[in-house]
Image: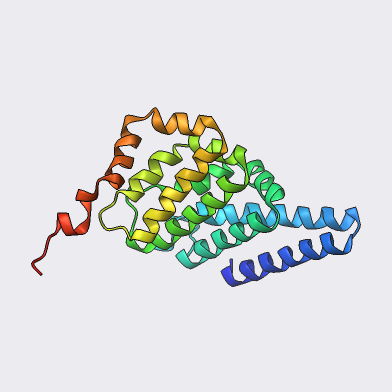
Length: 209
């Protein structure tokens, strides 16, 4: 599918939903918009599930650009209609888990890094806006995946901040999130690395001034 058409369709649907709420449009029109939104949300999740075009053995593939656009649309949906978007993702088969899987670092190619970074931002928005989604992320081992990303040596500082911000949002929703994090010695060791200033670049790779 044409990713630009999906992006434009997503923007149009958001505008229609906002206009319907602002003008008091009837329930039938709102129901139609919701049905269209659910179809689009599920289609976007399907795009994320397909291998990239670099995979020669796959029957259905999706370009990295299309995946990035799909995540951006989902992020816009989350911000514009929070409760509806969460319910649509959770109603899709493995909906939330398909997003969390984008955070997996195993065999992650350099070309897929923009998709991973956008997925980090989407997960942060979802954790911030819905306690149920945050809890499902925790059970989906999102903490471990995020910390695996954050401790990569070749990672940019801004991405590390996004990783830590997601952990904060997941922990903020309820006490269970903090208990899971602090109950894992592996996660606590990861966190301790960020507090150890000796791991800064000037200590790891000192250069003569």
